[in-house]
Image (cartoon, rainbow, N blue to C red; front, side):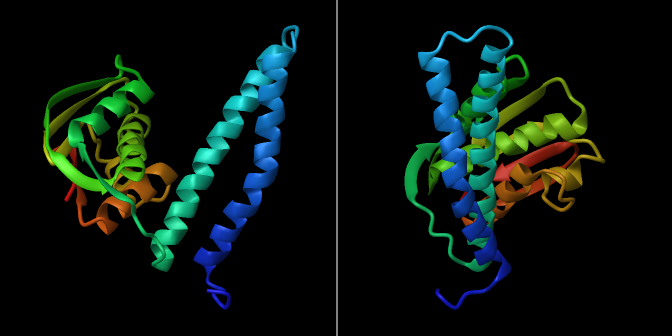
Length: 193
């Protein structure tokens, strides 16, 4: 591992090194928000710093995961869960008014954290890149269907047109775990193994 000079290893190292200053920024913003009576607009600025630092941490997690997959160093922690929970978590993150969940799940053994973030990222990419206000997510056992994929958004949600990091990483994770992501008749299907 010490002699690994690949680009994926370089990305992993950069993600690791950025976490320390990011943790400092997030920590001080959180401390300011909890211990100080800040007047407007400073209170709003501190909230924005907290939210942005959480977002950066999530992006670093995705980038680091992609680098581990690409370098063959991804070792998923497999645990059992129900596929319906992934769709429900996406609705909770993105808004139940925007993501309408139906269907019945099935038990799968998977990397729960990575797939949870991945399903949400794919639903969000469908909304964002399709210019949609809402989507229907139907769970059919080990398959999760997201309706409303447009011709222009399909390459993005499939990770073929690299304009959405979350979607691109999600596709790689699902495939690495033995599943598949496809689009047919305006529906994105996430098949979990």
